Every structure is written in structure tokens, then in C-alpha cells.
Image 1 (tube, rainbow, N blue to C red):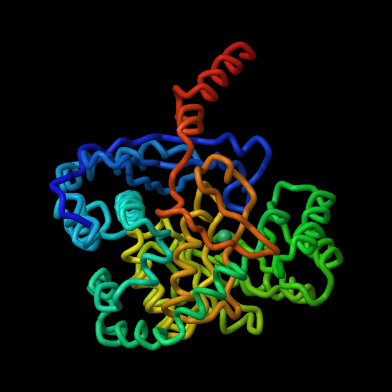
Image 2 (tube, rainbow, N blue to C red):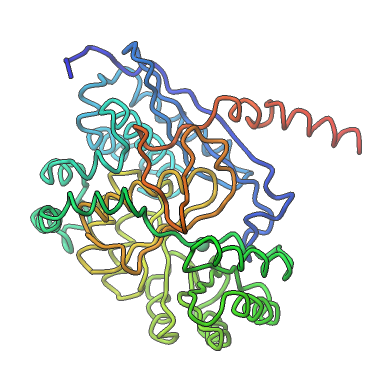
Length: 445
Ligand SMILES: [Mg+2]
């Protein structure tokens, strides 16, 4: 690529909300009525090549405006950056954003501000991959291990994972990389589906969708639990009858329980052979997760969608508190921090089964798992990416599922780009959908 003087000229932000609560899509024991939303940004440049960087983080409705304001607060760090330098080293921006000494007070490295950083950093990676004319997973898988390691912030994790160890883990997989890439392109990456299991669905809908999951080639489904034990027993019985004895069923409590309750409730469901119990208690309670894990084995313990940074993941691994590590593409500080978390998981030999669904989380996180398979862990055994069949049509390059597998995306970028018409219609509160909705509600009132 010829060197250019092009720079980032603007960071445009959008509050996008979808009215998913009306169908109880996404309903669980802690989140009964989510309106799936994206705090979304577009990086614009003066390169004249038509390329933009798209990124977002996911929220479930109220507060999405707060999340957008947090992205706006980062604008000064981004506008004016030279494109060549930024895309050659997204880690430099990552460090500057995390290191803003005044904004850091709002975290550090957690919550709304950290999610905003993740959205911005992911938008830079989207732009970098588009400029390299590669899907992000391939940009990462083709990268020199030395460079990949330079993208990782080892601060606060170096006691457990050194730069040299990380380099060793990346070099270990190098010899078979080409064969694994060919396998990925042929077979895709295994997924599992949560679509049958939302708490607000009837038993009839649960059974129908569970049967469809088997027919569609999935090997695992997940059910939301934790609101009412009697209901959970009845729903798990229906699900087990629908899928048969040899099919994995995971259960997800979405942080509903205290530690003791988590143990008792999970044990009360063991006759249905749950494969993992997800988010049994607070995502901050590392020792609580360890206690649950010790008590409910052989049921596995999974968590991560609300784990706020690499440091908490480090401790979950150190404390032997989890069997399954669930990264989320848009919860932590973006691709750079997820590289650190994937490296930690590889060091401990713990399978990564990403959280997805929401708005665009499947589109994003598939790239990280595919990189992990091709260039890091080298395996898909006992690894599955969550799949939920909502809202994909709003994206320019939606995920493609074949026989229960995510097909490897081929379009350049991070698959983050939402259709312009969808952004326009669902921008809150002035987009066409919400403006019309307000008129309807005012008329009814
Ligand atoms: Mg979950």
C-alpha cells in the first residue's frame, strides 16, 4: 500500500434500538423485556477510497443514550489520527483510550466507558481489515505473531501470561495453519442455538424450535432458567423429549442466583443432563463461581458475557472457577483485549464458547473464534459459538449458518456494518419506526 496522508475526519454516533421486547425475544430471568440496541459509530476518513470503520456495543434499551454519550466522549482521541499509523497499530489507540487519565476514573477498564472503548477499537479493526481487503479473522490469522503480541496489553496479567509465553502459544499453531484455514472454509465453525430457550416462549414454541434446531444440524441448544424451578423442570423435560438423550442442552441463569441457590437449583435440574450452567451468579464473584463449579460437577460452569475485562478472566482461570470461557466481542475493550483473553484461555486449555446474539454480536465474534481456531488454539473440539436468529437482516454482511456451523465470512472487515436504511429507521427516538410508534402510543393514551 502506498503511504498516504489520510486521516480520520469524523466519528458519527447513533442510538439504534429494535423493539424486540414486544415478542419476548431475548427474555430471560434477569432481563424480561429487552429492546435490543446498538450504540453505534462510523469512522469517516478523507482517504477518498469509500472505506469507513463501523463499530458498536450492545445494550438492551434504556441507557443506550448513555452508552452513545460515552463514545462521544472519546472523539477527541480519534479525529485527526493518521490512517496508516492507526491501522498498522490499533493497539496504540487502545492504550491511549484506556489511559485517558480523567475518563479512567469512570472505570478503570469496566462498565460504560470501557464498552465505549471497545466499540471504537472494534471500528478501527473493521477499517483496518477493509483496507487490507481481508475479513478480520484472516487478517489476524495471517499476522506475524510478534505483531499480534504487540497488540496485547499485558498490564495486570503478566503475572500469569508473559509476552514470551503468548508468542510461544501463537508459534505453536503456525505449522498447520494453512490446513486449518482450508478446513474452516470447507466446514465453518460450530454453533449452538439459544432461539428455542427464551423464558417468555410457550412450551409449544420451545418444543417446535428445539426440534428445528436438531433438524438444522445444531448439536446443542440453550434454555434460560432461574425464574421458577417448577417451570424450569417442565421446560427442560419438554426440551429433552424434543431433542433426545444424546444432544447437549445448556442452561443459563443470567446471574439470577446466590451461590447456595445456584448449587441447589442446578442439582435439581441434573436429571435432564444439562451440559453447562451459565452465569449462575454475579459475574464479579470469582470465588462464588469456583464454589458452584466444585459443587455441581460434572455439570460445567460457563461465564463471560458480563465479565468486564481480562483481569477478571485471569482470576476466573486462576481460581479454577470456570470450565467454559465466554468472550463477548463488544463487552470488553475490543479486539485487542479479546486477544489477551483468548491467549489466557489457550494457556489454561479452557475452551472458548463465545456469547453472541443481541444486535450483531454473532457477526462480530465469529471472527475471533475463527482466528483462534486457525492460529491459536488450533481446535474446535467442545467449542461452539452462540447463535440466535434475530436481526441479522439489518447487517450488510449477515452471518451465514450451514448445518449448524458459521460459514467463514469472506467480505473484508469485521462484518460490523449495519444497513443505512436500518440505521435510519430504528434510530431512537427520531427514526421512522420510533416516531410512528410515539404517534400510535399518544393516540391510544
Ligand atoms: Mg447468557
